[in-house]
Length: 391
Image (tube, rainbow, N blue to C red):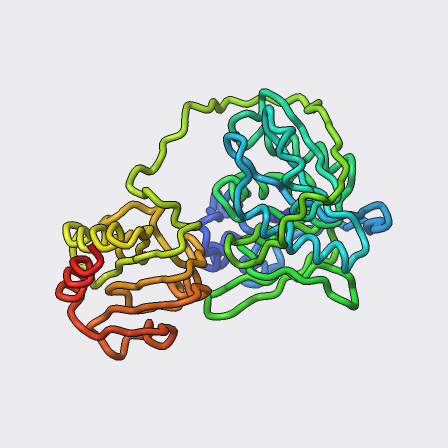
């Protein structure tokens, strides 16, 4: 926590100037700090010539690591269908569990979902822990947080990983707060450190310009969310045997939120993250009306429609179509980039495609550096000809 020693403070205002978060005000010649705005960055502490501000750090009790074991994968499901990212996480989790010589457990939350446990075991889980409860039928942050926290506090897993999906990004950080541990979001790589046996969590940073490897040395469990399409699932083995453990949701909680319904994105007839072929439009499309060229071409070859952030920000197409660091990470067999320059943030979401085709009138566009095939020319001439040919 941060404190101001009133007897030392003279109200000079130097701390106010140093604060980048507008968290300090001078009242009656004494600095007052809004703890809701303060990030404990320490800028005010170093700027105060009178030593009137200090940050009190609480002592940390050493963790008994012998009490923690096991790799957990949150088995996200919706309407009785397991999210594809779960199979990727089970593949990586199987690898991590073998390195740590421990069990791989899938955590399954929902209502009337017990039958899904066999599928999870066939994809690598040693055991499945289920909470089957009507309160978990539709996803809501608080009941899912309480359910996962309840299980983690009972079984003490060493590592918990989840997909960086809308669901995972929404409630897994809350679980980390409840468990008083750290969380690395949007990971693209997970490995076990041979020296410390800790989890090395790799994720893009600074706009994708560098890859940061993060560790959680002083807290357990170690938690991470992982992007879709960056890890490979193992082959399904329906003969695999595993254990199924059923638990009850016993934690009482109050929740003012209510599930009203799910609105489907009708503009995407083919799931972008699962599509074999994706056609994506960028700034070169120029107008919302011109996105019709992308739609017609995609329809002619049975492709999903993607877009760069520039197209999304211009409101030419809805956000669920965005590919890139702040959108979806995809791995299609063929990716066709139309009028996309190829900024590194966009490449982070599609460069794992098996075959990349770029259409751009600028022969120096960065997209051509990663493309397997490049067409230099006016997209408004090329796309209609291609569409006509495929039709």
